[in-house]
Amino acid sequence: MAGARLRREFFARTVHEVAPELIGATLLVDGVGGKIVEVEAYDQDDPASHGFRGRTARTASMFGPPGHAYVYRSYGVHWCLNLVCAEEGRSEAALVRALEPTHGLEAMRERRGLEAARALCSGPGKLCQALGITRVLDGLPLDEAPFELLARESKAPLAVGPRIGITRAVEQPWRYGLAGSPFLSRRF
DNA sequence: CAGTGGATGCTCT
DNA sequence: GAGCATCCACTGT
Image (cartoon, rainbow, N blue to C red; front, side, top):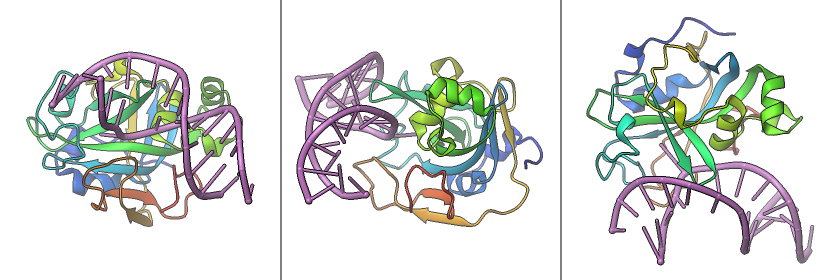
């Protein structure tokens, strides 16, 4: 299932080291969540990253200390969750794109109005809806309630590919997934 | 299946 | 006023 609680120090490295290690970790919000099966890396010098043009009110927490959440609204409809990496002052973060639901399936079904477990958390907006993530959690530390983040117990078979839904830096292969998982937002 | 378009809000130009 | 790190419903094979 899940191992030791991930400490803030885990995130105090470049996102390109952290992101692949997040695959297989367990993410819970108020006890509801599951195993991370898909993330994307965004860094300081990345034209596709919100931090690329410098710090703004929206992206403040992305420039904050590592091991915290950066939550933003997407397309005016959905919320997206990032796990902030690197040292304070830089802007590096891993976008959590999909979970394999393991805890609180009923709560997720209620929030999503769905039955199929496969579709509960198979996308960044979907998983935020399923876990009840909103701007309220922006900037909060990941090693304190309501968050709970548990390290993977064994190394996961990794799939790597280009990121989804962006228009700049499309060629960077900074999307990581659990190979073969049926809970991905899209196949690799 | 694949492809299209609408909903919706906020940030940045 | 454009442009999104999206999702869903709808269309047409």
